[in-house]
Image (cartoon, rainbow, N blue to C red):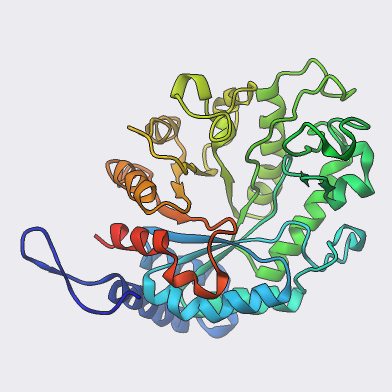
Amino acid sequence: MVTASLLLGDEGMKKPSIALLGWVAVLGVLALARGAGAEDEGGPRWLHAWQKANPVWRGVHVMVLDDRAADSVMEQLPGLARAGVNALVVEVDYAFAFASHPRLRTKQFVSRESAARLAKAARRHGIRPIPLFNCLGHQSSGKRTFPLLLEYPAFDETPGQFPGNAGIYARSWCPRHPGVNRVVLALIDELVGAFQADAFHVGMDEVFLIASAHCPRCKGGEPAKLFAGCVKGLHAHLVGKRKLEMLMWGDRLLDARALGYSRDEAAANGTHGAIDLIPKDVVVCDWHYEKHRDYRSIPLLLGKGFRVWPTGWKSVANTEALIEAARCHRGKGVLGHLCTTWGQGDNRRLAQWPPLVAAMRKWAR
């Protein structure tokens, strides 16, 4: 467990610990929030206070798929704040009490009330809540197809193909189907409302099925343009209409061959050209879970005009290597670090998750 003791710097100068820095940030946000008024919690004034208090984004991504999971994360908020965490990416996907399309709820789901309590409690601790709904790809997992494509099979990029999802990583929705956004944006709006969100993460990682020969609308299309079209449609709604900040995973914007990355953390199916076609105010979460000699995607994305939120996973050594590479670009658009757990961490002990502790220490300097 991280304590409030002082750490000794390389040159003998005492530096405040992660925990102490966390409390300083939290107290600063709370003071500013009180000045804004309780009724403004989650509004523009709260966000301005958070931005002023947090030049570095120190985040953690969690899966919250029912009310019990939401309660577990809420119990961890004091410890996360003390550790230095100031942003919480809450992946909900279809596990929410959607009213606009109730048939798209999973069997277990997060109630609107629990989402609101979690978001309010996070802000009370100086932590910015950012809901996540996975768009375009990840519309199935194993043999299980998620509700959107079950309820609207015509939205499938590969309709009638791959029975039982055999031979594929995950299904995608068709980025050109005229009915998709009407449904998906309604779901997103409900999540934005429940969390009173000022930012939204649209996912969009590991999209392997795109421009499929089985899709009557996408067959023969350019993957980069199709991918970018989906991004721009979401951006027009979230940023253009709702005035929110938009985040997405960055792997499909990267050329696997040119960068020497795997086909998971970068694209080998032609979507990478979208890097030049999408709005540059999108925050790109550049995830790398393996250790690399260098992380060429960080300067690439920065050079294209994006702000970058490097993202790691379960290995402390790999997390530290990514952060060291990212810190070379501090002040040039690198926001900080986002930790993920992906089932390897326990929501009941998030503040003690070793890569998170390492990340908070690295970004406390």
